[in-house]
Length: 338
Image (tube, rainbow, N blue to C red; front, top):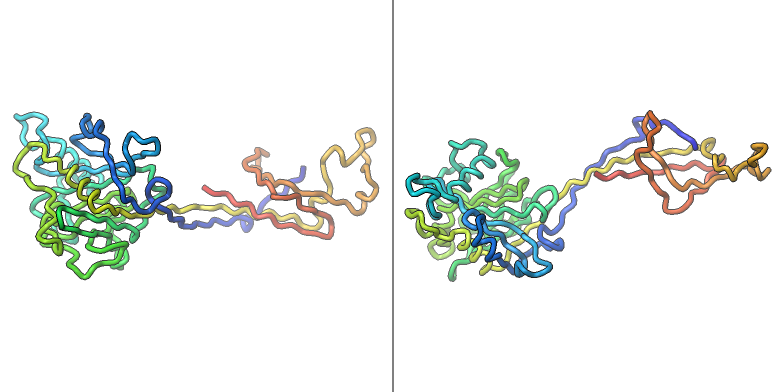
């Protein structure tokens, strides 16, 4: 076995961005949506509902995303305790995303530099198993439909030169448009943009007041109908039905693949003799074939990467044996993906 110490110039690190569909089967667009009646009626139902690409009981069915409704007043859902006002599943959801996105339990959500007086929103959280590193900005198209009203939304990543950040990473504004391209209709309302797109945590946070007064869709998408009661308004179901009726939700996932390249060089004077026992006689230690004394040749089949303690860390197998003698030099590029 022969060893050769690698030099700093023998190492190279490269990063490539790989994109693909964000839904099961590497599909970028969902046109069918289902929920689980068991989950919706269970303990988690008041907080969120899961959306599947097919019937939840089907073998191939997988959770694609979850829908939740948050309200700082706790409206739209049943109080935990009638003697404690404002504490309900919707207030829990609001506080959860307030902490995740803003990092401050006293901060209010702002959309396109406008802070709505009424603080309530809908959340679409893409299942973590559906995407790799993040959701690809500019690839998302979300259509909502209530009655004859249709609203198509996308993010403004291709329409802004400045990227904003919050506790959840990058943040873009939700505007009327498709696949990152803005429509000519207004991109925001008096309540600000239609919401926030948070690609690094796979989340779309829809601005409730803006949806209810949306321009270009006949006087409002009309999802949240009552914020003055603590009865179950089924706002998560309203958004799910709106997405299901529109039957078009598109987005791609994005992953940065880091590769470590190691260049292993075999110069003409190196690796021409083999340590294989068949190369020499077992009794005298002489070379079996006299032709190998002055003109030896070997066949390189693998490259092992060792540390200074001679511990084998990685093995690279060649697709076919590489012939080596004093007249040849070899360069083997080893690629390690992480």
